[in-house]
Length: 173
Image (cartoon, rainbow, N blue to C red; front, side, top):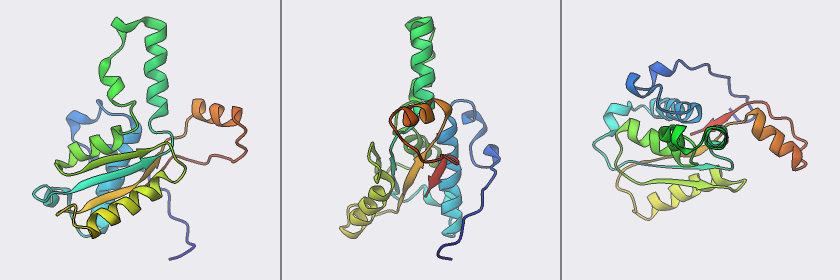
């Protein structure tokens, strides 16, 4: 219903993500995968039923995976290039959640991430609509936005003058 608050959902990651991938991917990607699978279920579909189609994903984010990025570069600075795990960098890029969700779902269609603008999540939905309307994709397009708030990011926002209270991470699909 319009104006109704959505409930906070506590997720069991193993209900949504293949066991071999649980330790390879970052928290924001795990949450994006879970939200995407729940969105598919809300639409009456299961992830396994969507593989044959040319489905795609378009997501938007202002900051992306800043926590993972800060951790990677802190390790690089403190311990040097030979001691950092290169797999950690794959979690640090803004497109990691959309890309890893697409891989987890087995989708081979369009995969885009709009990053850096306050309306990136909404822009991704508008772009998905336009692409479907104009026949660019013969499958469906999962679209939405994600942010992961952390102490380092909140400190950066506060230093820039942001006064808003950050309540929680957010993913909308």
